[in-house]
Image 1 (spheres, rainbow, N blue to C red):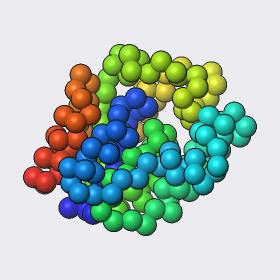
Image 2 (tube, rainbow, N blue to C red):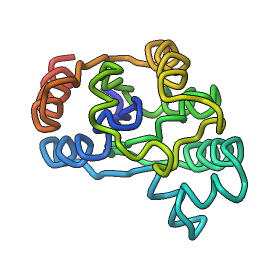
Image 3 (cartoon, rainbow, N blue to C red):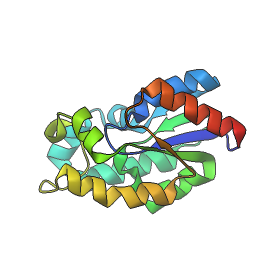
Image 4 (cartoon, rainbow, N blue to C red):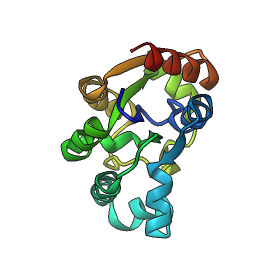
Length: 167
């Protein structure tokens, strides 16, 4: 087993909350790359989007991921990390990548602040467009896929832990 576990998936899939629970279950540390970006940039994701645009946010996210040199951590990425082949290759080298797969309808129920959530997408791109664009990328990079719809983050974390420990 690689020493880190990286959680990928759409906004609203529960990566951050599941990651915290999973880190507790496995006695690991926890890193949220969205939080790293906000700390290092000294502004929110939405502020970066508003001022610099979604491509700048994606570049910043890639840089933060490429800087990760950690072990024994659960890493929750931003949903757009999968646009960077370099970032995803780095994560593949240092971690087992787990895709928390939540279907579109469930994500729409979970997300009510699409316009202000800090999503790295074009202004004219709908959430549906984003979902269908990203889904094959998540599937491509995932070592493990866990269904996350209609389940609590604790249930998802327990399944990830069981799957990791049995592999």
